[in-house]
Length: 222
Ligand code: C5P
Image (cartoon, rainbow, N blue to C red):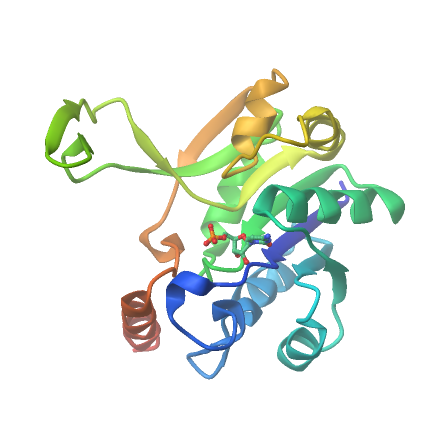
């Protein structure tokens, strides 16, 4: 089954506090985005990798990634994913697609294994983690607590049958945003399986996250 990994890297990364978009900032000796691209490329279940980049990022992306297919993204993450999916469709389509945030650089092969296994019986699959903290509404003061025992934190990569997620994205209203692709899949009636996520997949968003990410690299190389 032809399987394409799409890495979305077209964000501006304004929350990271870095001058260059965070996905090109160095992490463990290479650009952040290069880590997940390498993880996809090294996985025997993934045939092709494409990277969705911002309009002014081509030079940085080429320098970081070398000879990989680059696709221009959109203003929002959802638009960037749609651009990536359309690029897959235009280049002959695929059976399966894995959609991943460049901001989650450490992509364990075991998670890809679980996702592809779940796709044998489901239209979609996502890695999830439990919620450890108390969750509550918070505005001026602390509000009501939200019971956490039935909640999960949803990570990427998110895996889908390509034709299903392509149709779901095309049918999603252009004036409505979504923070991930599983919610777009669900809106189209795709049943999304849950597989075990990983602490390695935590998103690198804020300046402090870079230090934590460097520590993960140091720990995993010993
Ligand atoms: O900003 P956030 O961390 O939620 O972005 C998640 C991922 O989506 C990042 O890898 C970012 O580069 C990507 N993105 C994108 N196009 C956008 C906005 C975000 O590809 N317009």
